[in-house]
Image (cartoon, rainbow, N blue to C red; front, side):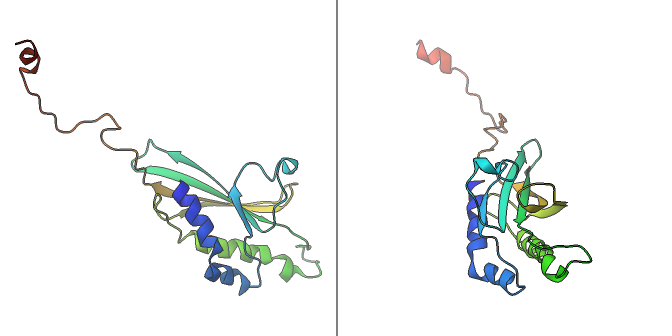
Length: 170
């Protein structure tokens, strides 16, 4: 998953990706990190700029091919009122543009050790945490180079030569 994470960072640092956000009047994700509960326990982490993306994953090696579930927590600091009587609801709802742009980018993402991301679930999380979040979950295949027929304990072609033991003692 190192190749996945490295390519993710590289992708969001590209000028053309940043331009996708800027052209919509939306801030691009300035901070990408592995998820470690930054939203639940902020005093244990350095302050990070927003918008931010936190990534976590789980891999199910029991499936053939192995499947990865990747969770992206899109953080957005909301300064404006999103209610129908808010003074600038259009500006307040820019976080929805941030989610849509990021989702479009992630749906085309693929790395050397994973297949293309396929959207699974989306959840808006505005519980009392440091920032508002949208949680996007994707599934993809995992190309684990360590799983080979030998590492699974299977041999498809075995040739047995007789008489080896007796030749040692002759």
